[in-house]
Image 1 (cartoon, rainbow, N blue to C red):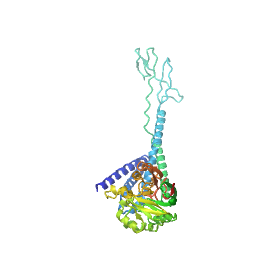
Image 2: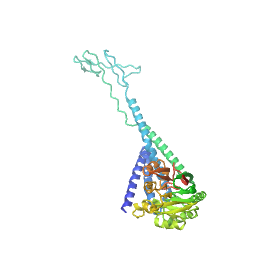
Image 3: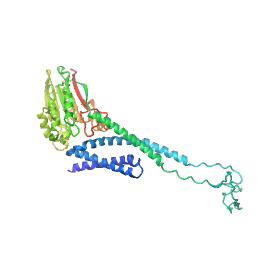
Image 4: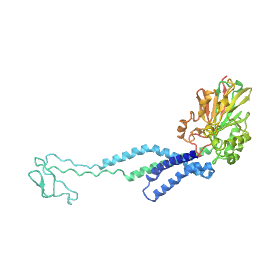
Length: 455
């Protein structure tokens, strides 16, 4: 309970600070005090409350919050990124405007020739219609001071009049309200239009059909007779409040057209319980492959009632590899296909974390092994157990650029093929999305992995 309250409190604090910044840049800086500023403030407050309400409410079955809440979450993210990037040019522009105003405020002072006789100063409004003025005389005492009549200034030792100092220029204003307002509005309009456009493109990409990628991966231990064995790999389908049965059917149809030898579903299949999403997951029973369809748990299964889902998936024909392996006999050769639980199973105190010894211990080391593990970070432990190839998901390829930069700090690979500590790793983008129905720079993906023999 304390953990949930802590999460909610942190969420409210972070989103509150973000919306405070957005209010300053989009409302306070772009409007004058009055009705429009008050309306903008109320709007930002409502949106600030919508964000945590969506993240918490969708976990409680309030699915009607999903579309408005998650779309705003995506727009908010891009507004934050764009406005932050614009801070530097905005600062430069404000400094340039201030320097120009300071220069314009310095008064022009006419030079005075040294050694001239009497010096006459004219006050404003003293000139007559002809442009001349007759100053009143000033009496100069012998000690150099003046008396009687208006003062024309002091005199030096030789009796030469010294002009009075020029009046001080009024201080330049700290800001020009009109220009600052125009600058702020320009930045707000640019950020708003760009964020909306990027999110619109991302929605279209996320809700569109996954792209098919084909990758060939050589395995030194793979028998020549098994050369070309094909594994249809998909992850992060995320059946949930925004993607239902039609989403599952499209992915199943796409995989079946590949005529693969194996199907590997690498975690994060669902965002909800069997009671809520069982019918949406049912089309998975139609998956076709020569040697079977397999599944390993992702972190979201542990938020969705993992025990019930293991039973349900086994019932509809997916073999769940919970820290175990199966021997794949194909084309006169053999391959070990292993799977480990997601670390979340241990982190939540369920005692169901990954057990590499149970999945890989006691096997024939001369036989190639392909490991299904939801998170790429498991590759370090996989390498210590001599795994030839690990297939993973979890990252969504970053899902929303530049969020991929944060993912890269947590996982060794965000998307694609790499070799880590001698073990090959392939990370697929996933076929669905989590949270905002948006993908920018990381399209949904189904991958056909073709194993090549180097023997």
